[in-house]
Image (cartoon, rainbow, N blue to C red):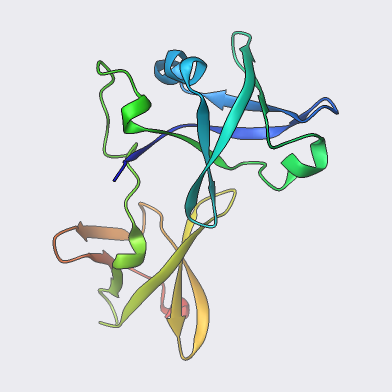
Length: 169
C-alpha cells in the first residue's frame, strides 16, 4: 500500500487547452517534474492523472493532464490537493507527519465537555479547513478539524479528543 505525500494544490484553470495553474512545494518540485502521474484528492480518494507536460516559472506550475481538454473540466478541482506516492519521492526528502495522509474515517471524535463520541464517516476539504462528517441524531453534521479545537489525537485507539463548542454537539 502506498503512502501519499501532499506536494501542493491546484489553483485554477489556465488557457483554454486544459492546462491548470498549481503551487508545488519547493522540496517536491524535482519529483513532480519527473513524475508520470500526479494524484488529485477527490472525495477522499487519491486519483492518478497522467501528465502530458509540466512547466514552471519561479512561483507557479503549468500542468497539462491527459484527462483534461478544457477549463470547465478543471474548475471542479480548484483548491484540490496534489499528491505523489512515497515511491515517487526522492530518498533524500524528509517526510513530516503533516505530509502523510491518515485515513480519518477509522477515527472517532470525543468531546471532552459532553463526553459524546461521533464516528467520522468521511472528511471534506473546505477552503478554510478540513471538516469531519459525523452522524448526529441520524443527520450528517460537520465538525471542523482545526488545531484550536483538537486536544489530543490517539492514533493507537483511533480517537480524536476535542473541546467542541456547546452548540456544535
